[in-house]
Image: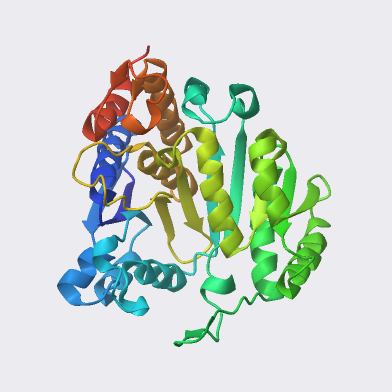
Length: 357
C-alpha cells in the first residue's frame, strides 16, 4: 500500500481549525482509495515566533524538505503586527516559499452552482465561472533588492529575469492546454519596464503552444473584467503582486474567500494552502469555512500524489453537501436553511465521500 508523507503547518488563527477538517477528509478518502498518509506537524508564523523568536525555525524548513507535500493553514494576526518585518509571521511564509523554490502558485476560482446566491454579483454574471490564476510566487516586488525604509521614504524593487518569466509562462500554458486553451497574461506594460519584458517573454513562450490562444490585459483592466465578465477567463497568468490581488478579487466571485484553495508548485516540495488569512477575529469561534483547506488537500492529492480519483471524490462530496443546503456562516447570506460550524462541515464532507444523495 502506498504511503505519502505530509508536513502539517497549521499556523495561527483559524489555521488549525480548517486544517483539522482537511485531515479528517484526507483520512477518510485514503481509507476508501487504499493508500496511507503519515503526518508530521511543524510550526511557522506567530506561534513559532512565540516559542522560538523565529517565524520559520530551521526544523520546519528541514522537515518540509523531507516529505512528499506540505499542507498549510494560515499565519499572522494583530498580536504580531508591531514586530520587525523580518520577524513577522508573513516573513516566515515568504522564506519557506523561497526555500522550497515553489515558483508557481495555482489558484482556481470555480463558482459552485449551489452557491450562486452567495456571491454579491448577479447570478447570470458568475454562473459557470471556472478560471485559474497562475501567479509567479518567488520573484517580483516581494523579493526584489534593494528595498528599505527610513523616516522620510520607503522603496521596493520589482525585478524579473527572462528565466523566471519563462518557467511560470510554461506552467500557465501547460495548464491551459488541459482546459479551454486560453491564457490571458496580465501586466502593466504601458508603464513598467518589468512588465514590458514580461509581455515579450510570454509572447515568445506562446509560440511553443500554437493551440493555446494568448491575450494580454493591463492589470487595471483585468481587475474590472473579472467583475464585468469573469467567464471570459480560463487561465490568468501574472506576476507576484498582481496575482496576489487578482486572486483575492476572484475569490469574491465564488461568494467567499473561504472557498478558494491554492497549490504552490515547481520546486523541491509542493505547498498547499487555502488563500484566506488567519482571520483572528473569528479564531476559536468554530465558524470558519474549511472548504478552501479541504480543496487544497484535494489539489495535493491531484498534483503531488496523482491520486486523481481521490481528489475528484472530495470535490463531489463538497458538491453533495452544498446541494443538501448545508452552509457555513460566510456562505449563508441568502440561503440559511442549514448553518453548520467548522467541524460539522468537515464531518458532512466525510459522510458524503461515500454516501450518495
